[in-house]
Amino acid sequence: MKFRKIKLESGTHLLLGKNAGQNEELMKEFKAKDNVIMHTAEPGSPFCVIDNLKPTNKDMVASGAICAGYSQDWRDNKSDVIVHIFTGKDIRKRKGMKVGTFGVKKFKKIKVKKEHIQKWKK
Image 1 (cartoon, rainbow, N blue to C red):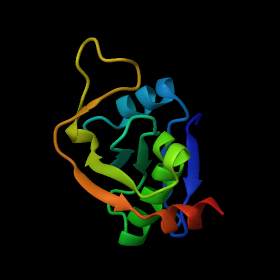
Image 2: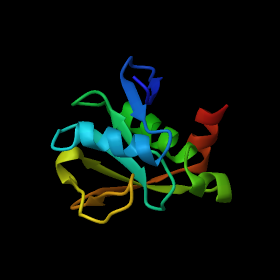
Image 3: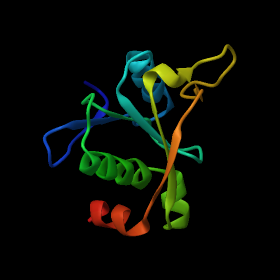
Image 4: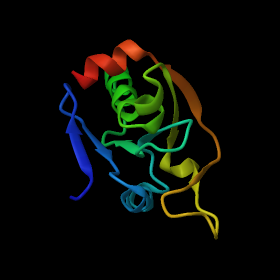
């Protein structure tokens, strides 16, 4: 698989796009599925798909930190990052949207603390 693949402590895998084209492919693959997907509130992050339909809270925290850690928001600000959480059933692609860009019907927001991102980045 050409996506970035990270194995979490639990053994669950996290799939991340490396660029806009891969984000596009990843979202097409998981569109209309129940997998948990994350993306930062600000543009410039990978879409991150947890390859487990029932991730643990620990997996969610780790995945949020990883998603934030690969974002432009983190790169530019080195502070807490807001991450949106949704499923493949919540995404939509309208005609004319740029490659790697999707709309999300409903999502939850979490604030990933700077300490969690730094812990993962070590």
